[in-house]
Image 1: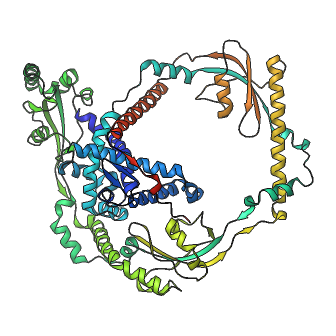
Image 2: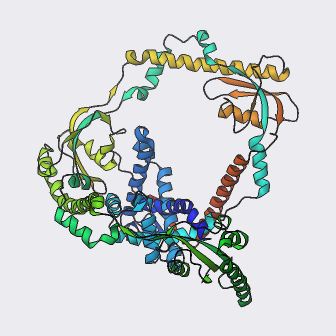
Image 3: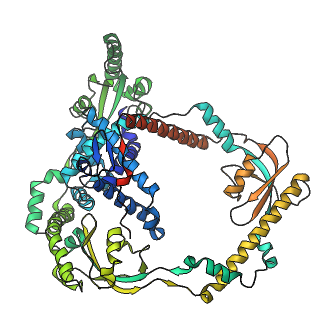
Length: 633
């Protein structure tokens, strides 16, 4: 049991990400506190209002996430639609419904669990170890204070506990797995004949005015959107920290007063034998398990060299029994339940414990090895402490500078230089860009709206200072502006002719392919196909997705059979299926993947059903009419 939990940390972290990260991403700083606000809410869950402010933060985070995923292909206007708005609202409602259950049952993460979760979070670690400097830096970047982050985790961890039980127990029937496996591995011997558009290009005869008519009918296709080149300055925690020099005396003093923070705690490696008995089991069952454990303990004491052999034979810990009961190195940090941990850290090397009772049953523990505690020398952690010092002081300086920075770019609107000089910043410049495809430094809907406003374009004023992300404030100034233009017909004529020619050639290819398919179905030997090849759903051997579906769905009761259809790239594919079979031996790796996929699908279905039940009891009211629109214009 212990080893299972330890070796499945990645899965648990995934579940945590699934259930907690959306809350970070869609609630923002103080998000859970703010849902109790009044006003024109977008929804009400368990009697608590989700405000427009909550939704605005969620919408902003949604756009930022999409921008990171799509890069240069991101277009903010594509996400200003009802589908995107409803998706965000759904996530907010789901999160609140889970929170309701946790609060109803007084589920709050205790300090020990909270501390362990923070220390084990990869984002807060450097070289696999928790880093206070990294922790502080990440909180600053996200706009959280430690207290707000702690409060958020206290509500989120119970939600993970509620959900993980459902997600970890999903399982698909073996018959379904077998059927799916047979379908995936089914082999079909096929011969291919492709009818390609370039075979018909020479036959295409466009009307003399076809290109001009297309140009006149599709003017928006040839528009060049407004573009600008902008100057901008960034006031951020990072830029302020970069300009600071840490106070050497304070750095040394901090190290001297917090040496335990930079220590490597003692670690212990052990092995154990578990005779399991459920918590709350009848006294007779407990006594039987205890008697069995005592008998094994006598054997271990009589011959410690047989510990591994006895663990493999008797231990009921599925994660460690096969390894002779061996566990990984552990610290005294709550990784194990307290009775087990107390016993482990009371032993001497090679010493064997008596029976240790926990909620899992009776344990026999042998301590194998000790890594003694140590303290990292000052020079080794000096950089970390200095970075921490800079971040903390920069965060305060940033907060103290917000009003002054905002005031100077507003009161001296003709240039960014006064603000840059006062705060020792650099005025940076962009290349030409459109509002739909901005550089990442300016890719904030509110900032872009200000930059493309009349005040910035016509009056040549600085934009107001906009906090584009937590700890980052930007003001920009239009350096050059090019209004919307249209490419002339002469510029695009050749491209239009090529496009129309290709389109007509594809139509001729489709027509010819359909005729050949009709001919082949009347006489399977009427056409000359390519060499035979064996394909399956997982090994298409060059056949495109669209036509592979046709090949694998074709009836197999009367062979050969010919199928055909558009390939998706303008060609038309015909396929003669000669033989259908199964492989001699199933692929065990594929079987494992299929089981995992179907189990995951079942777990997701179970979780969705669980969530739907919670939402039925949550008395949900939706008010999409109150959803604020994205600020992307």
